[in-house]
Length: 444
Image 1 (cartoon, rainbow, N blue to C red):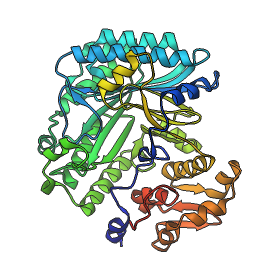
Image 2: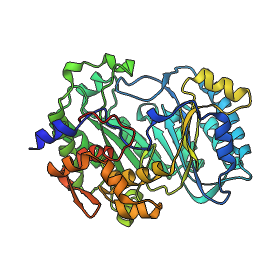
Image 3: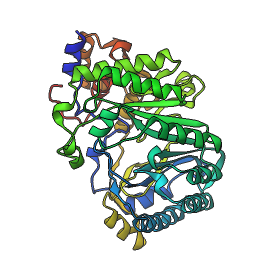
Image 4: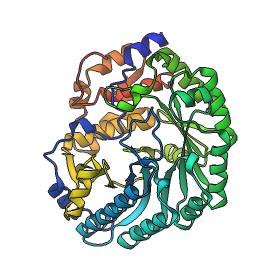
């Protein structure tokens, strides 16, 4: 039965629902002027989150699906940082006063390709332009292969208190197949350097479904990761879309595991982590009991945003850099993906918003239902609808796939309360998709 469920509902085309509506619904009808208007409307006392995208890496990992570029020289990075600083100034000037900040995330790419001095200067600028809360969470994504003691010292001095390390797999055969050779010693050294400089909250990223990967190699990589005791792990399934991401054409399709093998790998990793004391968070995260994600889940305030699962409760996310997505009160905005075009807009004194989406009241209800499903594996649809001034019948009746999901034993539905059975958590996206008004309704 499990194999037939996976075949029926594990559709790689389904969104991950980090946001709703999803990016394919964004259009050029929302532009820089809308973004400026929406920024000016932000409540001055409400905390905001900041995301800064650094799209550079020293080498390209073939599995990566993010917009990045190789830069072995520092000049392109320095030019980009100059534009990024100007964007920070432009955005900050739209707000009536310095907005309070409770959460900052540097993503990429590899944010730690920035020199220590440049990173400190960038953080200083952010603190001048925004009002940082004393308890602000500041997180940085790290490639252990290029991480140095000097940058660790700079991160600590800048107030960074969480680091997310790309691991993916410790299996050398898998690493070679994805062009990311990274020893266990390199990862352990990065963890040690971070902790020595006061950055004690550590995240690891692991991936299953990679070429030449087996259940045994997944478990061995997970066991090695556990030995370093990260506070949190994200365990993602590799999404192979070579038609969209050209670098993935360098991966041997024949070496990729099928859907049944992927499911077996995911379950083995989950079992290994849970046995080691980690709590399973939503679809693909795991956290120690005292980590913010585990505490947020326990309190019923776990959130889903463009970075994945989060304990961040801010309603507003401001994105900086190429391709960065922002969530403002009126809707979503996204910067130009191309570095050249992004830079031209900013240097001309205008925001680089290339597309976005203006939220409707119904969108907000559907987004709330989908978020609770993705975070809690259940959603009280009538209560959510009532809180937004809507009747639940409209949303339940339009979710045509719910009946089939219930018939297949994936969900239980009682008086509009939808609960996903724990053994079927890996097909939670199919349940969330039932409430997606924009998704192509062809059979899964």
